[in-house]
Image (cartoon, rainbow, N blue to C red; front, side):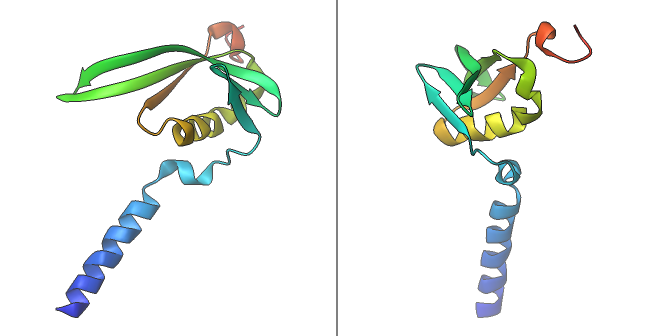
Length: 105
């Protein structure tokens, strides 16, 4: 019985720690002030809206941030990881205007 409980607890712990998709993204260099997120002191995104919805029969809160400057598009995943660490109760969405995306200019 002890082996079974230990195995179950270990499997649950492994599942919880290995499923966090954000754990591999550094949040170093990110700060926020007055609904603007900065990366290494440069404004990167601003809060564009907050959405409340019923999704799959669950109430969902979502924050949408709009990219200000497209020079750090390679840090979008890191930005999401940072914002999730600050706003744990919200789903995070980053809106990238076409003029800030490579290939769409």
